[in-house]
Image (cartoon, rainbow, N blue to C red):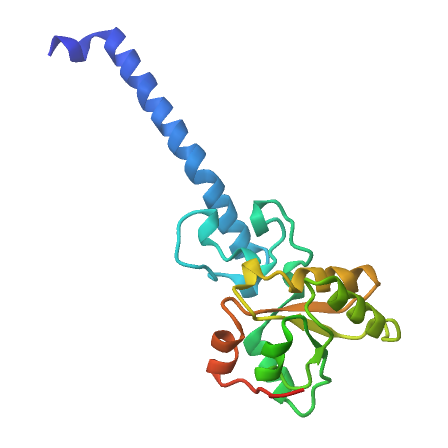
Length: 200
């Protein structure tokens, strides 16, 4: 009873409470800000999250400005991310002008299954693949709509789409998009019943 009314004890207890509150806010506020940016940067991305807590629990590869790796290192913006459902609808619409589709992954995966009409120039993560892609792109109009995809592994770790996207962007292409396949082509495209083509 005496210790509770001691002003010195009250001061120490208040200071400890304040320290705990500040520490908790320091942990939580960056997560809240990241979630807010993910929800408001692009209305079509609202509510898109992985199961998880904090910045690592947000899908970083959506291309939301400033999100990937929490430092804005993705080469694309949120408006340059193509969702699989939207591309599938576009490809099945006989009245839509189709984009050129570039597969930037591995040859054996391309032969096994790829999006119909997709062009293959080798893996975007290999110098020879990038050189072949750039050679092909030299005579393509810079305002041509192009969608790049890989789907060999989880999108956030894909070694191929980023170099391919950067190479075409540096060549001056203005209508580039990257196809968001969160897990891989099999689960995020084939198993959803979207169209596929096999062979070359």
